[in-house]
Image (cartoon, rainbow, N blue to C red; front, top):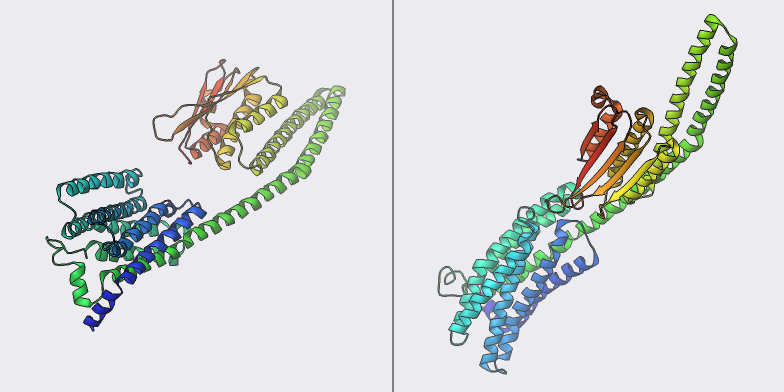
Length: 490
């Protein structure tokens, strides 16, 4: 039976090589098309170019085993030697891209630069060694080629394949949280085991070479023992890897579905916010405004009664007038706050916007409502993106600070400043400062520690991971400073 298999596969060796290469070529096409057609935030997606390059180079290297022997009868020996040398370089590039794939999958356990620079250094050093070896040897013989290929497989293919298996296991663990799909996670784990077997059939079963273990465990010994060439085993392993990695592409569909669901929820939330703001404006605010008018009318009547009364009745009327004035102040403050909420709701519905534009709207509204001269200044040209929630925290801090100026500071002038500073030394970090000043009477120390509005501002600053500082001296005004350190995409 073994002899029959050996005869069959020897006759059909070219077909075996073609099928072997075709398996990895299909892997390259599938991964390349997926990477080109769909951009994803998953770490697995960023590694697809390495996998596509690996599959394509593996196919070229394998097809060389069928192509070069066919040309030996037609081309001069020196041309065949050059082709064999090029095939070794393709093997080197194949294993280097496999290493890059494994390093990319292993982030952040490995630094991000490693996926690019480590394979590049490996290729440059190995190419220099191969070129030197070729220059020092008189021609490229079969034994020398097999020895070099065996060394490449031991030194580069074997550890790279095991690193990929480890990286796929890491990716499976990271997808548990965002995707919550047990089937997909198992698919990635099986693909990882596939690369373990790839390490065995590609990195352990090597061409025969005059050193251990290549002189004991090699492709020729396997063929003699089983009658099945190593190319069949490699084709089967490659087909398993390609199949399960293709199934793993379902992760991108799941991610897209989740993003679409999140977008639909956000749109529903925006519509609900718009409805609430409309109902507040058309219903609640109008009722409060009408109540305020009635209280104001009653206050005027009490004033007239107090003017016409004497002694005790006059004092009671005066107290009633003061109470009505306090109620009117509360109604006006409530009206102001609800208008602010409506403004913020509609601002959030508008989606992504420039922070400076939003702060300018708040300053303009403050000027009109209070008639306090307020300067607005923007420094720097940094463009920092904030999420709607982050912008709302900043707006509310500025709004609260301006509200304190209007109600407590007795100020005749205010200033709001937005400043984009240079990076603070950390990669991708940018500082955004928001400063609100006034020339009022200042804040007393107990209020600085226990005031509800100031506590709210500090809580919002904490949610932003920002620094909040309030400086005030009696008679010298107050300065509120918010310092936000924004990392790239965070």
